[in-house]
Amino acid sequence: MKIGYTTQNFIPTVSVSVETARRQLDIARELELSWIELRDPDATLSKADCERIAADARERGLEVLYSMQRGLLAEDFKPVFERALVNAACFEGPSRMRVLALLGEGDTGWSRAEFEQVLASARWAAEKAQAKGRRLMIENADVVLEGSADGVIGMRRLLDELDPAVELQLDTGNLFTGDHPASPEEAAAFIRRYADRISYLHLKSARDGEALPVLDGNPLSFEKIADLLGDRAEPVYAAMELNSGSASEEQVVENMRHSLKHLEGTGCIDPR
Image (cartoon, rainbow, N blue to C red):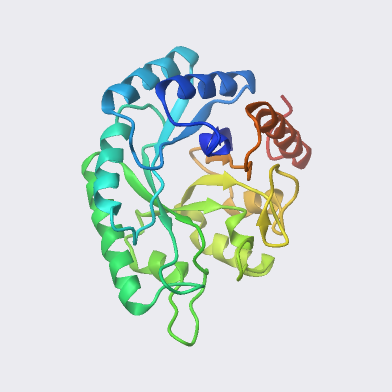
């Protein structure tokens, strides 16, 4: 795994700007990481802002994945995605565009009408990304993995109906959070099925249906997830994503240090 962190760890207590991005790049260097996911939820940074941040990242020898934060059902999905696509091109790092599988009106998955909209949005975004030399990846957010007999549609159906070039961005904690968490066995079967479409992980720990502020075990262990992904010609990018709440910068950094120690203890990364 190529280990980094997502700047989501500092949101909402830190705003998105050129200045805060520079500080977050410095933190990555302090932690001896090789990359960051720069989270710009509404794609409000300008192209000029992103060019400046990209130059700072190159000076520090860091890769950057630029990331918006929108579900495929969002009313403003397309304009936000198009702004993000322009900004993402400024950075050297994973050639991916990240979107979210978020619920509609139900509490587990999508209705038939919602699914048709999700599918159309994903196909549109994949085409836009491909035209710019990038791949689309969809994060498992709060949608159930499997559908149900009453017509609710889940992640598996979406991935199966999309072109296999569309990737799964696996969040290791989201599998087990919310009102309808998967079992470890269900999660393992899901990962095994789509392992060759996973190029990016959010490393997150969950307990009792809630994401944790540190990486400290998981219903499906990080060691097992790494085994399920298997050997790769290219490394999987993995970002620590922590449920930081209103924690200070100092506490978030300390939590990331603790999380790195945990990953070392599992054997998923080499001691630093």
